[in-house]
Amino acid sequence: MTIASLNDLICAPRLVLKVGSALLVKDGEPRAEWIASLVAEIAELRANGQQVIVVSSGAIALGAARLGLKKGGRANLADAQAAASVGQVALAQLWAEALVQHGLTAAQMLVTLDDLEDRRRYLNAAATLERLLEAGAVPVVNENDSVATAEIRFGDNDRLAARVAQAAQAEGVLLLSDVDGLYDGSPDNPDAKLVPLVEGVTPEVIAMASDASSSGMGSGGMKAKLQAARIAERAGIALGIVNGKTEAPIVRLRESGTGTLFLPQRKDNARKAWLGGRQALEGVLTVDAGCVAALEGGASLLAAGLTEVEGEFDRGALVSLHGPKGERLGQGLVEYSAAECRAILGLREGEQEAKLGYAPRAAVVHRDHMVSG
Ligand code: GLU
Image (cartoon, rainbow, N blue to C red; front, top):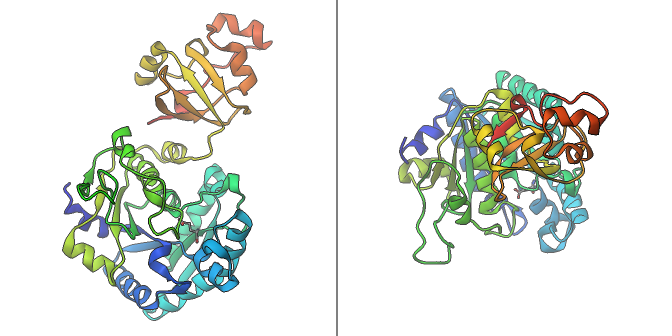
């Protein structure tokens, strides 16, 4: 695959198209002509037999203007939630009216982080998406901002788009943004160059990105886009970041081929891809060098290799796994509570029962419930 594959990405049989706030809204009003131009392109993709899921931001920006809230409705969580609930009505109407011009039916889906973290709710959301696509609708997804609290929000639609792509088993995600893609330095630096192709979101790649959203309107920023790229790459999904500012952004992308493409790095099975894309970490387990080598060989994480336990969590929690230098190894579902983990820290199998008061489990994190990266 080369950068020309951005075109292959557009041709993905099932494509998630994420549209940022700065593209949809200007001075509190919808950019109606731009939206019409994009929807005409979606209709064309559909006519070519592709299925498209839209992940649309813009609710907070639209609602803030209608309520006269400062800082685009992002001054605090209560403002953002009020703005989102007003703006979401307008946003849904906008998509529905634009799509119906082409004989297409919009389907609104509002999801919270928890909906996709919990396996049953995730499968339920996946089934709804599948049914909607089968029935010919265009799902328009956004975060349910008006109810999600700070702790359980995605907060950005970039990661939401990657998670939705996973749930829908899409082949590609296209993040339409107001930047050209990932630069190898600050975009203000004239020497910074656009990175056309990324094969693996490594720490070096992450170091290129900043947190802030360039428009100040969305909450995305390049860091969130890279997190989205990580979720996608391990689920076997290609992800592109492109500038969508001009009208008919997909035609422009086909012509210019400008953007950053993140190639899929592996294809975890569906359950592991879901686990690897989970976001709500509840603790950190640090292990010694011997354990790192064992994990790399595909072993389960055993208490003998455990050197530190951070956080308070129950059995079944999602924890991050770190090596001796704090380097991240992956994440998994822990078989013990934090207190139990601390009790058996560094102990071999024969030494654990006396501490626990019952027969130990086979592992602290079983390899079937663990993903690397
Ligand atoms: N869900 C937010 C909205 O509709 C946008 C989140 C983001 O900026 O990515 O306004």
